[in-house]
Image 1: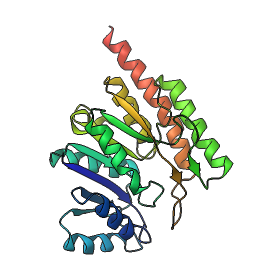
Image 2: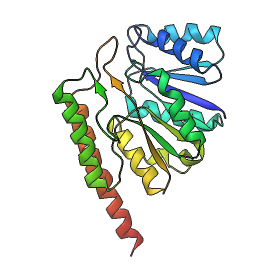
Image 3: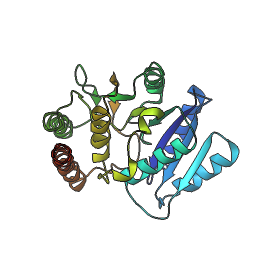
Length: 242
């Protein structure tokens, strides 16, 4: 199968080279698309240099910081234009272990439309997080599960893999999320499509280097995104029934 790995970046110069190298050692046939939001620390230039040496690496360098949701949507579009079979996304900071990429790709190759690298399916698998942050993440997923009605334990996970035939069924232009809420929105849309969603247990660890992008604004954006998704879903149902 033709597989693409999407890695959004912003100031990840301390991690990105080693991450790409580890991925290609484990999966030399995959293509890697780094989407960099004009990092001030030279991340884009590092990837550009690597891409000149290796045809499996591509760089989409954007002129400003447009956010995670925008980066992922751009990556999805590029993947569909490139006729990839499976599209895997992951963070650049080693919180997602390259050793576990194969588990997600194999599950997608076996037929799952969406495969989620899950921190909470069957227990807690989070390392070196504070109790506050782990509780915030877990409760956020519980909240999304309750409001939106799906049985997905880690809808906010950014370590996931889509089959292209499912991704084609989603109107990317209609997505409402701009940040981390996109993970929840995409999960819900896959659920509404009736697609097979499989959660693969992973161990999530704190980033190796650099600083976290998570802040209170991002948390609140995800919180209100869930309500907007629910509201729009109910409105569409009502409109369809009139």
